[in-house]
Image (tube, rainbow, N blue to C red; front, top):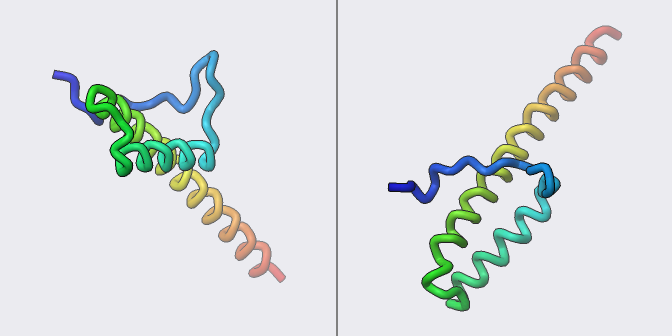
Length: 84
């Protein structure tokens, strides 16, 4: 049986560029609106939820990467400031 959330989404493919955080969030918002507004056909619900899970993973990854980069920048600034 194929688990709904087991597929790890590629951030980009050869013919599809990586989504930005903003683009992923906008797509997630659209999915949420369709689900909440009951605009989604029951046959597409699993597909939409699978896509939402992929987008959430992508966003979480981007947030983690940004946290690491910010921490590294702050640490380097503290090191430079401590040398004076």
